[in-house]
Length: 149
Image (cartoon, rainbow, N blue to C red; front, side):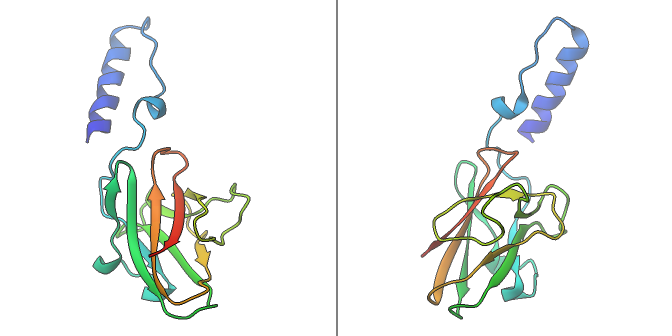
């Protein structure tokens, strides 16, 4: 909501005077709060948006969800998305990320939140609970990390 008001104010001010230099909004408004609920959706839950896999905000622009992987060595596939798989809220691995779609514990990869098919994958070495984090400090290139709980 704050971002919408800021964008409206910027548009109004720019219409009033062509002399004003407008800042790049991505620099002014880093790490905005999400305006909808995001879910961890994957082959472990039939790609459904379930409340047990909701992301919660744990710090400014940082969201986390917990998942239990019970089969060591299995490749789990998942995405981070809203209820409707909406454009801008359908996050998979970015094709520009050189690491590929496979996540490694503790290493961040760049997400593309306008992708339909690119998913993340993770192969746990041991069964247990894991935390998937998405960091929106850079709105254009959110980063996803998986850690062992």
